[in-house]
Amino acid sequence: MTAILLGSLPFPGQSGDQLISKAVSTAIAALFKRTGQLEATVRAEPVAKLLQGSIDGFDFIGKGMLMYNGLRIEAMELYLQAISIDLGAIFKGQVALRQSTQATMRVVLTEEDLTTSFNTPFVVEKLQRLQHQENPLYFKETQMTLNPDKSLRIKTQIRVGDSIESVDVDITARLQVEDRRRIQFVDVQYGGDAAGVELGRALIEHVNTLLDLDKFALDGTQLRVDRIRVNGKQLVFYGAARIDHFPQRRANAAG
View 1 (tube, rainbow, N blue to C red):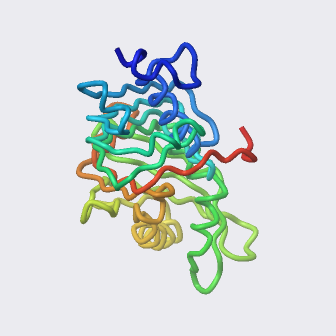
View 2 (cartoon, rainbow, N blue to C red):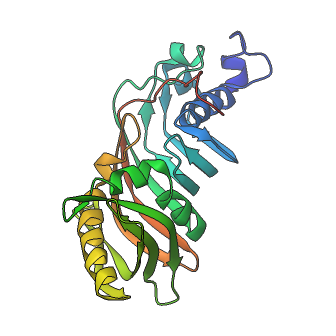
């Protein structure tokens, strides 16, 4: 029926829900440098709503998603509530929301994702803003491990200022959400020698200040986390997102 309603539009071989699913998938994919599997499902009843740009809901599932800042996401699920879109923008390969919408989300990071992300220039540069004895810190060979007891272990080597030698830092902690937007390391245990413990304490204090979701939000979105779960070698976040607008595709971005 949707195909009949939209059959005169210049997209042969695509029904209305397929067209809109593809356009929204394209808009979400534009948030990322590279994506793996993408699945999108539009819900509209009656389907004639699509002609007015009204959608009852939209489900999106993505896997293997690499952000432009180098951070990788193993899986992301978004379940959008009823939304209203500008149908004309769809024909330009864009998605324009007529008003903000809410979505529930589930985000999965693997142990490998965490290690890779912690070693990206994006994160390393932020960590180097930490001053210890008025000297910058330089990180290398950071390793993140998810333990059977649901804790997270961080092992890294830190060079202080112009020092030639690096200090081994070994931290084990649990993750906790505060005010739905701040990720905090709690119940922290420090290993290594006195220098490693001192640097570890400074690092945790800095990271706990850094991990504010508003600093990492994608363009046009606001993220909130309700709970965090460690499932084997995966870290799973459950929460919600407010989406004000979808960005346009970054045509000149590297794939």
